[in-house]
Length: 520
Image (cartoon, rainbow, N blue to C red; front, side, top):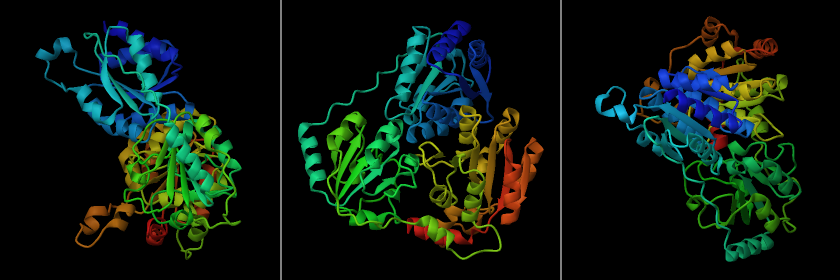
């Protein structure tokens, strides 16, 4: 029964266009799944941790336009994957996780590793159920469809050939917007003289359509972190990031209308909406909108919605309207004898301007995101919905597996790399063209910036120094330490075309000023 179900599962994955799976197998059923998939030409990438496997898979699915597939064992395999499921769901990335489980027919005499796995995964997925012997091809196809439907996210299937199984629900259909909402949106847009457009992560699947619509709008266009690149950052109307904090406040305060396209409240920093301008939201599916006050909401296909409200009327924004020039301000901070975080990003970009970049959570993201200028969507990846540490390295592996001929840069802090360190071995085994750049200051720097008196002191945020270059060398990856610009240039030159790690000792003094500029 196990082999038959595994083969049916593999055939359904192959029929859906799946070419790669990621995971950490446990035993018999897992190995049957992998073997059946390999017989059909599906590659399997062995990871060291289940959450890392999920991040690799969902990143691969997001970049290829397909779905990520991860395989884990029962019990600790499933529980270890929970953060990866949450990352896919809150960062809106398509993932189907298939876990082994204690078969229902044996559950009365098997307590070892027995959990209610369907219930365990349910809170961090779009749906969690059983892949059983009744029409498994339809179950897998429905799971993939649900994972890819807006909002994209994770779906969990517990592999149990002794049960008939469950059928994932069809994605909910988005009802067309009320005519009154459309009229109100048109009226607000017609009356606006200083509109601002903000593009969010739900816009990514329709990036080309949206980019074309806003290109000639002539008004400021901001993007969230995960929508970076939808509008070319060299465009005259690129207005910087929308993060929900200080940097974009002057521009939004001057606006008389905010038009959100694919704007998801999972991304901005929590807090009350401080702006008085009316808000019109365009979205492909119903979303939570309380963060934005009482907006006018339009739901439907983006191409149709944009045709209803564009082109915008004449506006009164002056030429060269103020936009936050974080890059210029960061470059203007006092120089240091060591490597500043912003130097690390700028010098890396001199060498690999066309690279695909992954960015971990941490203080370094406050310089990496504004300084790495891009022209196309999907060129910079970050976890901004869950904002989990330990994302960047597995995401880089998923990206390099999807695009093996494209250079990938992995920006990560010492804290985030510590959470995913073993995955360096995957880079070596697969010989992926990824350069891992570690912002090493032996500290949880972003948390340290938030730390007040009597909040744990150095014991709460400080690590002992670690030689990540030494660890990489032990794993088999070429590496270098960099303490100044000259050493960094040399290391970057050596890193082309192969897995490489640069252990950069940074001067973290500027993080205080950077935090003030970005978040207040």
